[in-house]
Amino acid sequence: MALVSIIVLLSFFCGLSFVLNATVIFVVLSKSSIDARETILMSLAVCDGLQSIIGFPNEIYGYVNKDNPFKSESLCKTSGFVVMCLAITAISHLVSLCIYRYAAIVYPMETQVFVTSPIKVTLYLVLPNWIYGLFWSITPFLGWNEIVREKQDTYRCSINLYPNDQIKQSYLYALTIFCYFLPLSIIIYCIIKVHLELRCMLKLGKQISGADASITKATYKLEKEHFISVFLIVVSFFTVWTPYFICVCFLVYGRSLPSGFLTYCALFAKSSTIINPIVYCIVYKEFRQTAISKVRKLLRRPAVAPMLVSQLSTAAAPTLALSGL
Image (cartoon, rainbow, N blue to C red; front, side, top):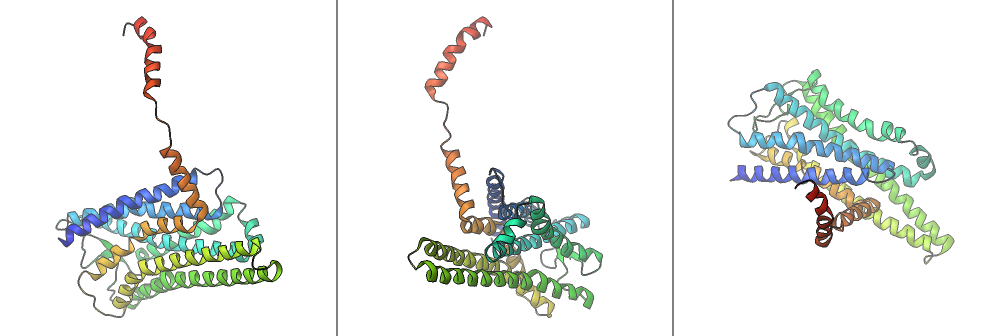
């Protein structure tokens, strides 16, 4: 029964993740101009979308054929490499979004000059995320840890969480620091700095223009929206990834885990491919408005009226008669 539930849940994740991330990409590409934030969002959607295309189907296949897993060792390891690369790349994208928001509010003039060039945005805010994910997923093939079949879920390959030597074990320490604690620290730092800057702007606005001035109210509204976005971003990141990294920490220190616990934590982490597009659609008002506008246009698209079809058929009748039809 548990196996069937996991297969159904994974299938649901796969379909919903693909639809949500494809929607994000469609909405961004349909805009006449794409800013830096939307470029990062689209890259994140591509990353999460690829996970739904590559990662989820492999896992579903593994669960369905639990007694007959991938016979090809290279195929299993390649799948593990791709999934790990995309997961870390997605985490890095979340950090880039927070850094951009921090720079845009704390250093607005400098940021505005910087983001006018799409090439600069790609080089400094998008490409490093993919390089970062590639680095942490390719180093196990170079001898720093390794990608092997999991002990419990033998149909799936991932990094060796039970290393026998210190070099391979050091990779797990580094992975925990640089792919969990460091991103979380940067996100929290950027959030605190932005919050302090908005509080300062609000205080200054009250002193200069008064509490009832439009600029003061706008600043207060911005601060309120920032608090909501901060809450959603931090809670989603912490909730999705903490269980899995707790498992890694337990295994690094030689502790044992309940049977199946790591499997469910890894499955829970995969929900980030669904949570990311939902959270950022809620957080970014402009993106949300654009998405709603596109949906309304699709729903309001006029259909061909029956009268019009009848008129077209009548008008085409002489032509059809001449052609012998």
